[in-house]
Length: 197
Length: 199
Image (cartoon, rainbow over all chains, first blue to last red; front, side, top):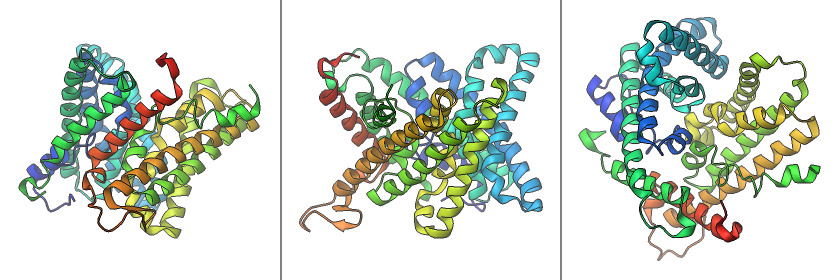
């Protein structure tokens, strides 16, 4: 379990590899299976997730600690987080389009899609559940985002090869994809216990 | 379409997990044993059915441009109700499901049905659609949970099923086991119900 008295590096490593958000924690699987059929879009989605996740966690951390806690409105957590994130992604999209057109073209349609990506909301909830400070929340979120990126890009690479392989008819398409994910998850499970995590 | 069909389509023909492939996070993460899986299924069913009905009720007064934030607010209200009820009456279940209860908000099935069905159809039809999807989801997630619990622990709903000589296969309780079970279920579904393999 992650806690506030762990070092920055351990938090990052734990979030990225040992508790990989896709393969070990099972969060954001819809986009994982939906998008990983092309390498190009996996890279785009991975970058967009890292970017939005770090920003969104910062905002929701501030909302939680400076708005919900002092006003005793904890039961509004779920609603306020999702609305904050949705609003924030909209603002972010407008801002990037005006100021960094190159980045905007690279992230493209993935920015709005991220509102419904559970990874972003999950990261925002988890840093609150783990009771992390703001700096450590950022490190944790960066780790989660990097883990998402690594997993989805590797998976896209494997899926491109699978398309060429002879596979029994019933297993073609999604079934074999899940079994591949199972094997990859098994590989990530091997990191368990690394540095005592 | 007849009303009965609105209900039955969610169970098999448009099963949310196996066919439409939505709501996978909850289906995989909360299925380490049959009890957790059933708990998740019930929590999900409540949110799904209630939000479908409410969205169908107010669909005529919600302007098109702001419908998504309105839907999200409605869904998160029901999720908060479930979250707090579960914390009060089933604290153990609430702890083992953890972050996945609040994450029902972004469960794509709920949002998908709100957008694709409840915002265009009458209240009774939306109620049946929501119930059908709920039953389909609960059945499959409980099935996955039961398979993983039998193979990984030799029990179902905590009751010992296999003889003591059975060596539990821990693999199925761990994350890779979930992917494997759902992969094989999908393949089985494809083989049994899609004769001719036309897809």
